[in-house]
Image (cartoon, rainbow, N blue to C red; front, side, top):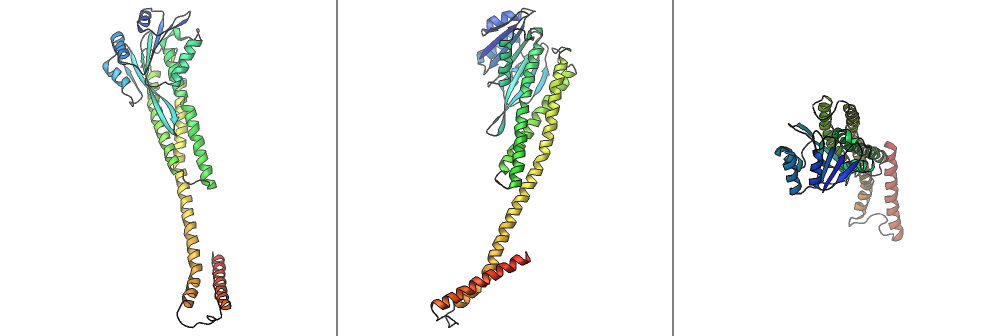
Amino acid sequence: MFRGFVFTADNVTEKNDPAEVIKDLKNSRARTWIDLEDPTEQEIDFLIQEFDFHPLSIEDAMIQKDHPKLEEFDDYSFAIFYAARIADGEIKEDQLNIFIGKNYIVTIHEEKIRAVERVIARARSRAKNGFHQGVDLVFHALADNTIDEYFPIIEKIEDRLDEFEDVILEERKLEIIDEIITQKRNILFLRKLITAERGIFTRLLKGEMRYIRESTQVYFRDIFDHLSEMNATLENLRDLIPSLMDAYNSLMNKKTNDAIHGLTVAATIAIPLTVLTSYYGMNIYLPFADKGIWGWMFVNGILIFSGILTYLFLKKIK
């Protein structure tokens, strides 16, 4: 899906015809944003023809599951970020590819990304959005909204780990080991993204991205601070995982020991019962064996008395 926006000092115009958008690229006072969601081959050919993007950049944009990066070319910069979301308890990533030139910015992504939709809504609803001042402001809005979506994910992970602590301490549910491992994978995956993206903003703040004005860098410093804060939180959460695993293993060992203790008590109580029943099961005359119901009650009384006596003895030495 092709969406184009042309920003001028007076207004913002949305154009979905590639040919019309290209005409506005020649206007030095206009700033153009082209967003491609799940692009077709014709739309990719259009980019190659009109913008002369390097084949390696196009390849990176079309092949998903790459890694966050920032590359500089003669006429444009190319960056890859990842939007994150939670699906079925695990983090799923959506690759956002950004080409930024002197007066244009092009975004490519396979799936609908909430961060992109929010920036588009901002562009549509606010004629005075400031995007006409420079495409670096559009780039900042995209990066800022993408990174900010990590916060609620981290909060969910943190809340889930707190729940695990309560579950383990209260012994309410012991089948949580798989969930703990899933959260560990989420933490490691998110740390990997954040570490790589911090590297991008470190380079950007050093002025290595030519189309980012010095006056705009202060806004990117705020994003870098957010990433640093998230990384510190994830470090703490990662350190919490071994403690949860140790607590879980200790609880499982306690449960196992309790079960073995119960079986031991039962077996010990059964020893005198087994001896008595075996004794009276022999094919010879035994006392009270011929007393009918009274003999049966006598033998069962001895069995019950010996069981109770054994139980009280075990309880006393426990």
